Length: 220
Image 1 (cartoon, helix red, strand yellow):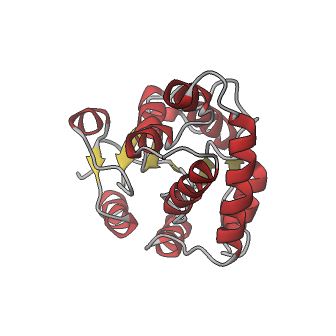
Image 2 (tube, rainbow, N blue to C red):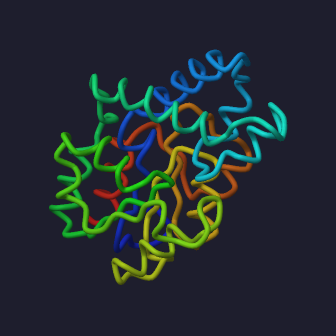
Image 3 (cartoon, rainbow, N blue to C red):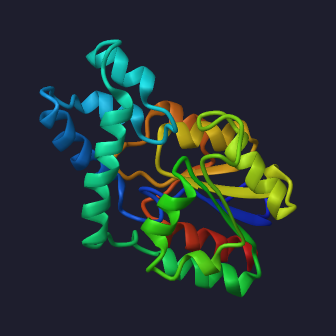
């Protein structure tokens, strides 16, 4: 058995897992921080991946008076322009959704992004109608790395968290899904799988195609 127990539902992260937007936000942040007269440290961006609130990281790096709201607003504008030009889905998205359809497994998205961002990032892809519920910023009390987004998704799907497979690309997302008690798989995007991630995950996958293969083996 590839996974530790039968999967009754699948919960996807969005940015960096379903759609290739993490690199977009990295480039947008780098551009905006230079506009504001600073440099974007690689470690600062890495620490922000998967977080719903970057205030502590930005003020720690650039000072307590750093204009966080203005920075984030400008990043959204720049990233929005880049996304409007077209951002591809990650490899294997429609294939794994087809497989979940064949297995009659429900699925959700649990993201740190807003519902508006979900519509912007996935609206033209055909993915949204194939998802039973979308849990986004504002739908839970505490964001990743707390378990709330994933617990909310499981509750909406009516499936016990232990019976859910969570797919994540970020450290904070993995921490969130693991804390919720889900079978957690990391599909690395901009962040490599560390020893901590291997310890929290039941598996680390190269891509969604590999995950799909595990579901086929599990449900045969």
